[in-house]
Amino acid sequence: DHLSIVEEIRSSSDVLQLIRKFEKVALTEKHAGGYQTAWLLLRSMLPNMQNPVNGALGAQIHLCRQYQTYIINQVKSASLKGQDVSIAIQYSSGLAQHIASFVKLSSGSNASVWEVLYYCLRCGDANAAKA
Image (cartoon, rainbow, N blue to C red; front, side):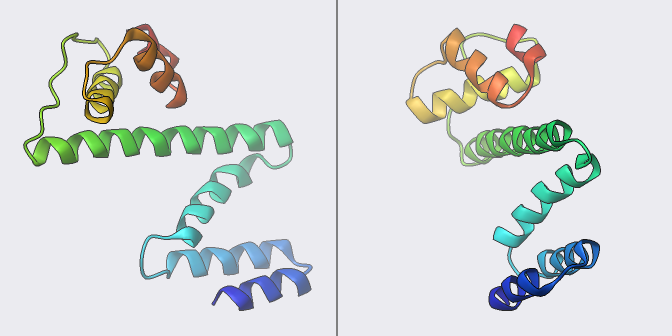
């Protein structure tokens, strides 16, 4: 229950116990929702929290991977529905190809080099951006 979690945060001084309780709530959530998403983000930051920059880097890596998954799932779903995901330019990177298909699905036209570059960087893959 959300209210009980908020009340425990206010009253708890044991951070590790609070993290374990939050994990339990997130993992027992019936539908993939806010607590699970928040837990995945927090879990990517926790190993690096001694250094705030490294903690932020852990969050950035998590968010990039989450966006990669979103793009790939959108393209796969569209392909299964019979939508045209073919692209005019073949890229050496699988991610760049998925991104080009994603842009085509979103805008209705083939992706420009700049769109592919933007989404590759947004997904945290500079090597795919070179493809």
